[in-house]
Image (tube, rainbow, N blue to C red; front, top):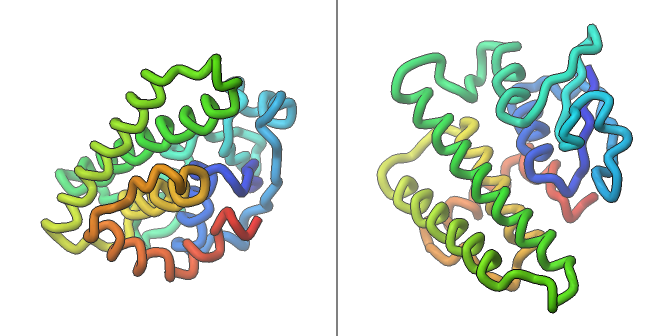
Length: 200
């Protein structure tokens, strides 16, 4: 199998962390690609031109990160990243969706900031920032209710916090002590350290 990825992409990082947590990284060939300015290496496999893309041995592509992670989790029974059924499964998928949505907002901020200052939308920058803040508040409250295994919800949160520190440190969004404490522990995991975007 081959994974089209970019080290700076938090969505590709989520897939790489999942592979490492499942002990499957040795079965994957990593191919670094550039989605900007034109995703010519990606569009033959994903018409959206977005990463990550997992290309199976028969040439079939899987995208995007939730679908890829679902497939990865099906390859081995343990450790289980997504519960098989019931409310536990729905909770993991819901929190993954929340983290992915907050990441979409963060990526939008990064892209908007690349525009000329006179062309930037202050209202949209504010809207995206508030969406991230609300999402982090929800995750912080979730931290206070229970201690969860390092499942796909936790992986998704790690990718969100890591990306905010990597691309938007000036916004200082991760201020809740519960999230800071959680991140201190999560960032020491081998899979999270190995995929640190600041290391390339």
